[in-house]
Image (tube, rainbow, N blue to C red; front, side, top):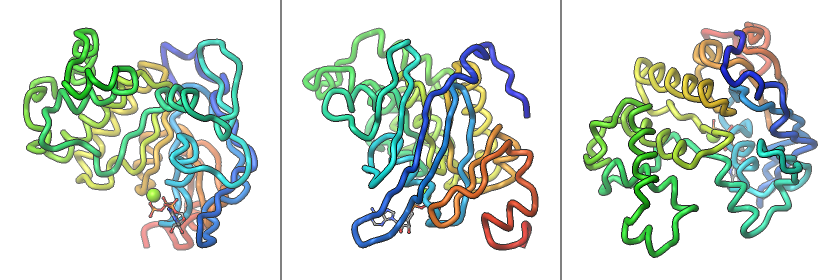
Length: 268
Ligand SMILES: Nc1ncnc2c1ncn2[C@@H]1O[C@H](COP(=O)(O)OP(=O)(O)OP(=O)(O)O)[C@@H](O)[C@H]1O
Ligand SMILES: [Mg+2]
């Protein structure tokens, strides 16, 4: 699949350089082993592999929810500032970096008793003083941005509904809108459609791809369905036992590669 984007000048510029990344959890599980991975601005990359292969750990290392045991993650900001080492960030620098990296979760991570709008505004929390956010006092510009994000994911009519009353697909649209108002450079999505039916999944992935292409956002997405990987992403990374065993255009993810990653024939 070729990438067509108004932001194509953004593409082929490095965003992340991951070298020798390793993670051993307390207890001894080696979740990532010597992973090398370069990600360019605007790429849409699927991460695939068996349960336990290390997909979530990779995403969590990128946004530093998990501290890697070894290796390096170099981040190249788009604002012309010099690249920096993600694994060494602390305090304000870590908060600043995290605001560049939006997360989308399998179980949506919404607050059911709050309105859809407030759930989306939660994406602005790192930029709003604590007292204001507790009082749910967001600047008008944030509310405008949240409504625009809801329009983009097609649920602006639900802005004042209780988020817990939405369908799963609608909840994930809230999750995407919340990530967007954060104005990220990268979106990390950990099995964002694993809790949804196939038609709704395809719908959500269509939205995600369109938004990332329009905004020149990088997307790293963990996906279970290889058909969806082939259909929605440009490049696939395959993991087995914490090691990267495939890294190529998604169209080259054929039957042999499927067997190598999953240990069984495709369709079995
Ligand atoms: N917090 C943790 N403490 C200890 N071990 C962990 C922790 N998180 C993950 N692991 C282990 O690390 C390995 C990789 O887990 P990870 O969640 O990254 O896999 P995954 O590819 O995302 O799997 P799934 O498809 O089931 O989500 C697994 O063996 C898992 O049990
Ligand atoms: Mg996982």
